[in-house]
Length: 119
Image 1 (tube, rainbow, N blue to C red):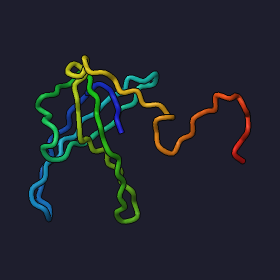
Image 2: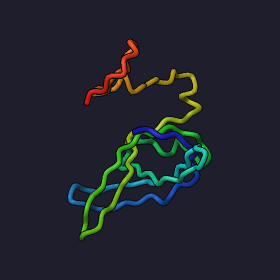
Image 3: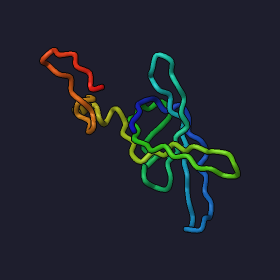
Image 4: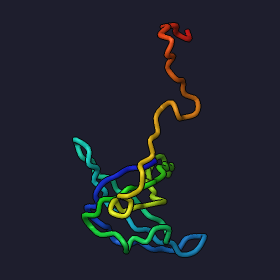
């Protein structure tokens, strides 16, 4: 999934020891530019993204995964970024145009004008 917005805050870097060794997590708050802006806490695990190249106020495009897990009867959800691009750097790049008709498993509307329903 992808989202665009402005970085409004960086949280403290968290580190620790796990069964696979030392881990590091940097979280930041992204505010969307929608009509009703939302704030989303996004985590970056390890050194996948150089967070030192971003600062508060930067407009960014973030590619992320959403994952939930259960622990003691409660569910916890993580938003994990795996790619982040500054809008300044990507300004010259062409935007991808993805429509529903380009996605697998979708139907194109008939140009013949017939209103037959599949059921």
